[in-house]
Length: 398
Length: 99
Image: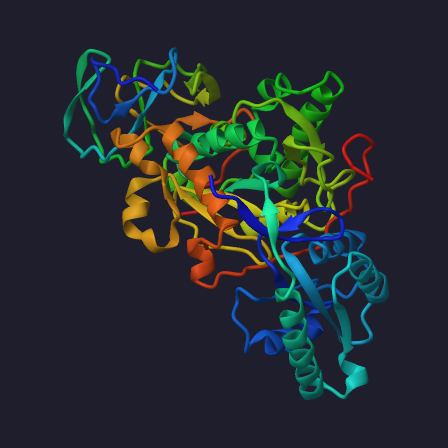
């Protein structure tokens, strides 16, 4: 296996991408960010941010985790000037991580045109500076990989998700960190899942995280189940869950992570995306990209996205590798897919071979290859209000 | 994942003890297929991923797929019938079909 080459970061992590982020700290600065990024390729300069003007500990934690993500090389922060976001605190965290950072405050620099001009100048120079950093070799054991399924149908649980599970088992075996998520889509699997806990104390915590999700979604009035799921042959949340659960593979579960937390060591982790306490701020994650960005906030270098109906999304910061579970969907939209797992259905290949292909394509992302969604310029980003998670001893490295 | 010799090759029974099978390809309305060693006429066109009962499932009984219950039968379900939102109900959150 050829080595991966990656950008070294001060905290010891390595990035398989070296992106300049242009980050709005309130929606009012979003347009300026888009204008700053416009002349640059999507692969080099990407727009992220927090839309809300009201203070949010979760938004602050997420932005800090994302702006110091290993795939990020430099950050241009853009503030309107009167919002509540703690921009100095964020800038200091980015600077302390060894990354070039700059704040533009639109009200101070003289409005939109001046802010865009200043931003483009800074981004151009920062991009040149970070690209001059020599890359170093990166081992598979240093990879952090997330997995999500979206636009699921009944093939997801038969081909794509179990193949992602095979890939996860291979990666965990190599010492990598693998993160699966969406406790609202693991409803009905909590007891089998708890049996895989690496230690006794984790067992009740796994069951409690799924119970919490079931209650939270019940309070919202809808489960994590879409119209397309039913058209694709799925009938109940527990049926969808059993299929989704297959993404986690067979490895022992080492711990539970919360958004913006990184894993203390290699292994398989469950990302608990549902906030504690009384339901507040609406659905835990309003769409797939809100989940993807939480996986990335935990340090994921890349995300395996299994789809049956045919999702097309990618993400800012980390590549999204699309595994298509449904052979009919693959035939309809092959340009959006990286792996055709539906071949398993007609005996064209095996789950083990598709799992190995997923690992091979993930490693290739560290060797200069791009995913279909990267080639198509997908850099979706969604970050909403949420109750922030308390730091849990034993689950957090700091 | 086993292909039952007494079943149509488009039918996939995912685990022993399952009372539903998954379609690997579309089956057209009116087709006569092998199912659990019997000949059954499929009454409506069913697409990839949809479920058929591989035995008679009495009302109230668990529907079993992947070896695990995925809900219960809301009505008596005959061999070969489509199993979906009209006759299978979640033990957890009720699913709302939008259109």
